[in-house]
Image 1: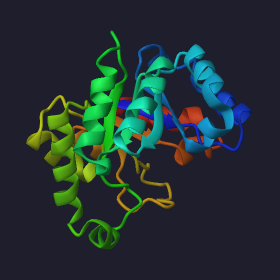
Image 2: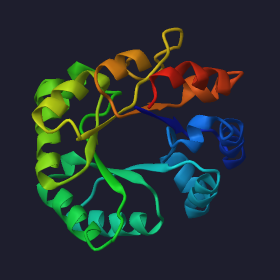
Image 3: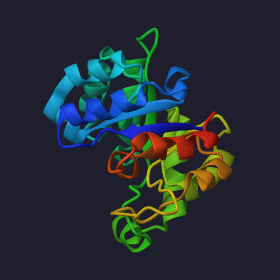
Image 4: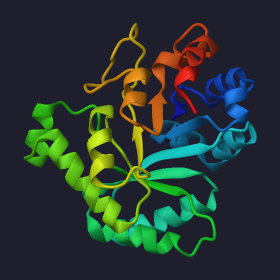
Length: 232
């Protein structure tokens, strides 16, 4: 399991200072700690920020959740691949054609980034999932994950609680990346389906995403050190 640190701070300077505090950890050199660049940071700081993060030795997960008509999704995926990020995501709710177009476009790259599909946002409550999708969380997440697997993506973004079922229905090598990770003493904030690093490891999760519990801490390195025993 690997740790993905969310770079969601109010400025580029603060995000880079956080990485500078973490980059000396052996786990970074070993590829066990990645950086996640989401909407806020990418819109504000652009491609240059991606380059600065990579220069510090962190593989990049670009979390833009691409969701549009098929050709626009494919165009976006091509531009992302040109940036050299290691992983990015798309919304599986965009449907088979959108996913297929993305994977077809990426096939021309000798080395392409890993593509993850978003099943259901972890901020949704079970009631909201029923309202939006007309289906229970696990059933819909599994349906979307299986569709993505058939279309050739590398894995999914899901909650810890769907990870095991998804792997059983697809492949043990099908990546699961899970947001909503908190240490036992931390607030759940706006996440509804949360879990601890220990629970994620038990469910066979490949990547755990943590932001606020790390960057809001007085000593982020201390928090990361509590997670290191679960990484490999």
